[in-house]
Length: 457
Image (cartoon, rainbow, N blue to C red; front, side, top):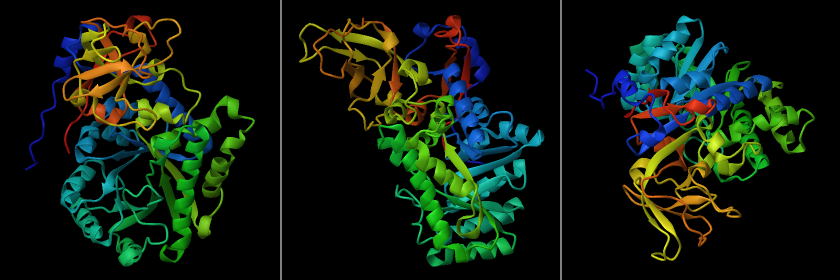
């Protein structure tokens, strides 16, 4: 018997209520997605990896929806590779994965944390729905291999294994010089010889680029992550089967998105800022590090929606304004305005707080969200942003980022759009997304669809 979970709302009932409404008519706060921005970001990523001849694995934890996952994987690639952070994500997108399998595409789902022993049985049951070769896990401790054996026994086929490498972020994984801790690699080789596991390669997730502020920094961070995995391969070559093809999987959204700097038409002549990354990618895709045939796979998730954290890294310096690029926003209502000396600087109160926005910091500024410039008309010459300056559980205080004395150009009862610092956390506050389409004037602020997201673990 499966553990009880939060009920998933009836999407048709949601559509009957929401579709056709303007965002100013919504019960607030509400999470809104712009499908036009989403489609553009997903397409440019797929185009970029195709241009560079590297693989791609889409992370679905940001949005946890079938609809965005479909955009992330595209329609043309033979391989459909995704990462899930929870088994409910896996279960939620199963209809899409089964559809891809039935069309002859190769489906593989990576469980995005080192395999918890308690989840092996549930993971095996989900894997059986798709078939052999459909599940991979990451491992960084020899004790986790018992769960890999249990998966094999229950699923009837072996799980693929990525050995988790710590390339400097220190969240999970082993250092490049120490992958064979407690004979980890040797034990994996034995399991592979017995048909109980299949070594895919090395996996790193490094979010050091979240503190970047230029495209060059993001590209160099991706290059360093790749180099860290190549170093791990070289240091542990004696533990891998000679001649084996291994995949190096690396990424986090800012540094992975930075590859678009290499593939845009303006980059055709070659920018020296990207030379380090170009050469590093070629080292994996065109050479044989430590004598092994290697493939490069990039993984990322929040690039599809973007948020203030992502925009602040400037990993793609060619992007436009927040309103035009960030696909997720929270529609909230202004409930009071303080423009007459009540505070040291003018402020406004809105009816959304931590439980509707999250409380995720951004390295580039001290606020908790940015109000979309299209939500208000600033006085001429006022270039500062209107931000969420302070935040409580169910309400927030807005003020100018620069502590300007200019009046806050908002009115009580007005609906505004707040762009969050971290899309993954903000999305988790809601059971569904209300979808608009800014590619058409008539649907830029009118709901055209509702996408249900899964909640739980």
